[in-house]
Image 1 (cartoon, rainbow, N blue to C red):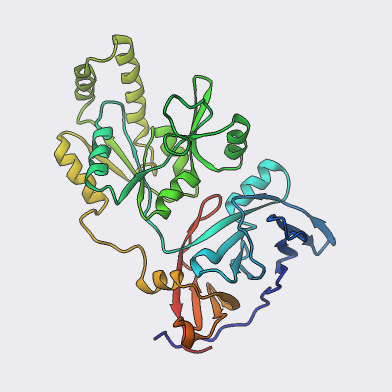
Image 2 (cartoon, helix red, strand yellow):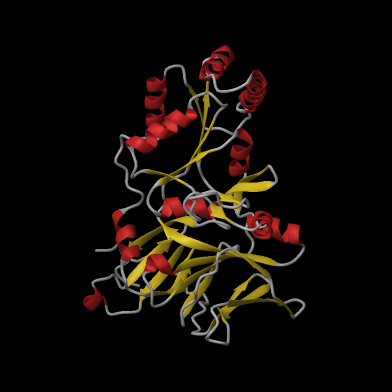
Length: 383
């Protein structure tokens, strides 16, 4: 049984079958499918009510394939929540960002009106783990042990590159092979967490690649350098940042020389880079945890403790997860602060689903150009 209903304020909710009109401040947003039903494109127009002029914005993010009917309402004066009808709840929630920090940044860069789509996700998901450290510190071995011991809990994102595939390399498995013009555009639109130019080619990690691992119920591991970690920290992606350091610089040099695979010039270059990374690792607010790899097994146990691998934690409450998987269709009927009231489109007694749900937006995280996570759902007895 659900909780007793609180009193919800009835606010204008757009529920047109073809398009939705939502007022936010001095602007009116019109969102709908193309007049040509054979096209899957979504038309977005903005009316400035003060000047009575229409603007067609630059639209970022992966757009939804809108069904024939949806409902929409503004939230926090910076997003428009859209619920598609006719699909399960966990597939129907989208947010159109209109005044978020990401949108404002892109608007400044492009010099034009910008909006951005973000897929709404029930639950918080597992935070990705950024692991950095100088060459020779043992972070690769630590990551390999995690992947071997917990294959169902961890996954790697597939990086993008502009270089040509090598023999036996499969697109989407070894790399996402892409064109230079495409990756440059995506980088300019903030879709990449980090990137680097190597021998005339671009390599990078996209937000979508990391989100895809999280969507599988796994925690994504990012093995990147300190500069890459800094880029991820500046993005909308919430992650755990861990720096693995040696017990001393002398020990690190000893390990590098013990490999016996590099020239003296290469060793000196790695040592210079290592000293720079060790200095940067102390930057305030960059890394959440520092792990000293003096003994591999001890360091590995400390890493597991940081990631609470011995705890059997659920991503979100059971009701939210179950409600999201139901095939029942819902539409927006009202709003009260950070909660949105949803009405079932089917008969409760026949479907077994709650007729009224409250969608809690108070714990949102992430956002464009990635997913918006942290949505919670509770049943409401009466309205």
